[in-house]
Length: 146
View 1: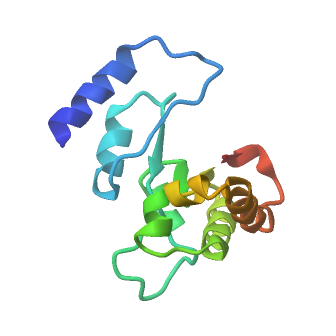
View 2: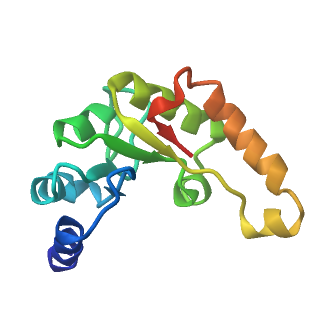
């Protein structure tokens, strides 16, 4: 993984990036500090997930503060694998979003329907439901990307 990530890091560090665009990469948690240390400061580094509380017996989870301790400023929440494989609810995603923002992270909030929901003409219903849970937990949208 380090060889692959080094290729990406070199490409991003030497590439021509639009100054008006946020560029963010999201390596696995074990590589957050490594990636942050290798990338130019203008490129954001994101955790792939975090939990909704700061402390407790949440084996295997990472807290927003841990992401910040790795000098990273972003977190992805609500990714389809978290929703569909791990069963994370819309409400949990909303709570995670609130806590991450309170700690000072920027949030990439993922929303979207499954294939069968799209084929069943349920896209708007699913997206509205997912967004409603996020909206209930966000008061300032300047650090949220959908």
